[in-house]
Length: 225
Image: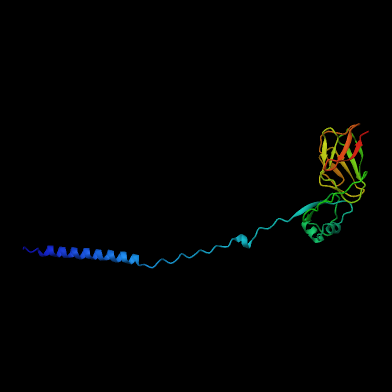
């Protein structure tokens, strides 16, 4: 048999070595992958506390509006609604020596008390007349309260029986108190003067003024002479 040249022999030897090395590397790689320890668990990310937990939203203070009446004092109002005088001063930005004016609006902390309905007797609330009938600038209805206790007039109505109807705003009458309901507008309501806001007179001779409670019951009437 002819002998292979020595260069070719060296080539085959080198090729065998390379193939053996690749095979060994592949076997070791596969074995190593199958025997690797499992990866450590991913650490849980701690929840970042919300800023709201440390800074909860500030609640809006509850207040209601009270209209100053004749004879009211700051200490008397505070006692009536169970609040401190200093709280009233601070909430309304008043000084201790600031005088109160009839019709002035005061903010009172807390919820407005629910007025207790009064059982009116005949004659407790009367329509005493219509002044300036037929003249818008002068026309007004006079109403007087003769009963006992504070009378809440909110949602009471005044009508002429011909489609004109006035609804009272939040307002209370004390015993002996009287109010005027003016037909005209352009003025701010006070505890003694209310303004309907119409642009023409509604009361004329022969018309009947009717005062109704919030349930629609007729409480008083007056015939315009």
